[in-house]
Length: 412
Image (cartoon, rainbow, N blue to C red):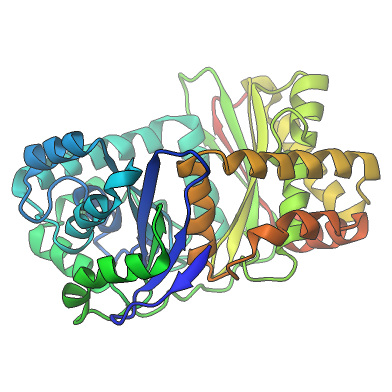
């Protein structure tokens, strides 16, 4: 991986596709996440991220779909609290054509009225799912319990029927111009061409970006430091979702590698982790059990989760928080740590076998402005960690003393 320069302020990162790969991926990442949603306009970031892939530049919705089909390409978007990603994937030999199509989507979305109405309907369906499905409802209520009003991680970005219904074309265009910027943005390309060629090809992005500066940074608010429990009765459902979580550290903290491994031991490794083995396999109390650590630029959060029958929900909640506390209080056994660690390192090696998965590593590196050789040293970084470091990082990044617990579903 290697960084490059763009005279409009857009940062560049290039890497080669895996050996023998016939495809290329290119992503624009910008400060356009749903943490930037204005008051009363909740849902606008998700709307813009969807609409930029619908119709752009000279292409209406049908024309763009046909152009992508002719190119053998796909155009997708992902969104998080801090950022939005627009990605195009297709044949490696046509990467310059892919870059041009991506530039239309990122710089010149059309925001046609029929597309706006369709995306508004899609968001209303997602809002309904968030309110009626136990897993989605538990996540929504967990974030609202952990983070105070005004915090960029508090909401899930779907908005409400009222807020989405108030969003019109002018508001969409204004949000796009303020957040899809060169400054604060990065263009990541996994292509079979040298960096200099990417720098020349991306010069066409200069003009539309010249007038756009990055928006003001998000400002997290202090998070309360005590345990809370919320129960959301959802009659008529057969399963209860239990989510335990709390605030966590930013990606740039030196403790992150140890915190990453701590989460893998807790619930991040399918089949191997403690939550899966102890709650699902041995106790037989859960349909699924896992954990996630989301470390972003400003901070992050962790979630330990399980789905269970209503009669076991409170017991499962106690087991989840018990396993979290154990991570921060006890040393991980060396054998257990080695097994989890080598599994994580092996999974990374598999990620380098395909263009899309290798590209995800590059996007992660570029967004967090990590050194170009960061992933080369990742295995040795993980292997250098000892049980004491894992325990200390878990106490910091997976702090059960600041955890909230949400039970959503039928409650016995």
